[in-house]
Length: 92
Image (cartoon, rainbow, N blue to C red; front, side):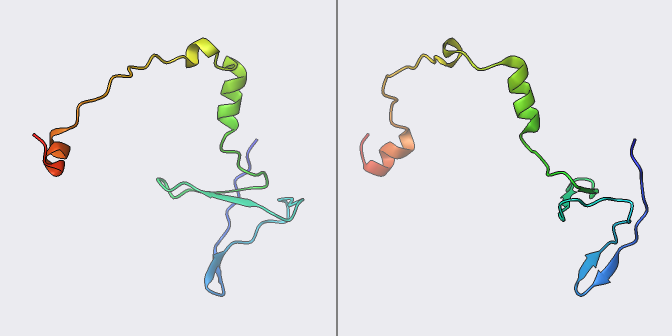
C-alpha cells in the first residue's frame, strides 16, 4: 500500500527543500531522489535505485548465452576504399 503525503517546498538558503514527515523512517541517514525528466515527477526513496535490477532478473530467467549464440561468422575480405577517401589520397 502506498501512502501519498502532501509536502510543501520552502527555501533553505539558495536551495529548495521539503520536510520529510516523522512517519517516514530514515534508517541509514540517506534518501535517494529520482527525477523523471519527461514528466518532472520526483520520487524520494529510502532504498538505493538499482538501474540494472531488471537486466539481472532477465538474465536469471533466460540463463547465460551459449557459445553457439556468440559465434559470429565474419567476412574477412578487404572492403574497397570509399570514393571520398580515394580523392583525399589522390588515387583514382
